[in-house]
Length: 75
Image (tube, rainbow, N blue to C red; front, side, top):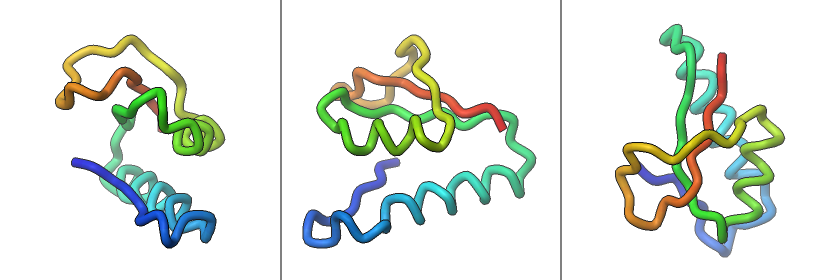
C-alpha cells in the first residue's frame, strides 16, 4: 500500500531501486499502466516519479485521505 525509505537511508538510491523493481514486476505481469497516489508535500518522491515517466492525472478513487496527487505510467 505504501512505499517509504527510512530517513536514515535517504540519498542512497533505495527509493529509485524500489520504484524500478515495482515497474519491472508490473511489466512481467503485462500491466498496461501503473497508478500511484502521493502527497504534494513529498516533492523529492514526485520528482523521482516524473523522472521515470509518471504523469499527473485527476485524483479519483484515492485510498488515502492525505493523497492529493495521482500519477500514472503507461507501460
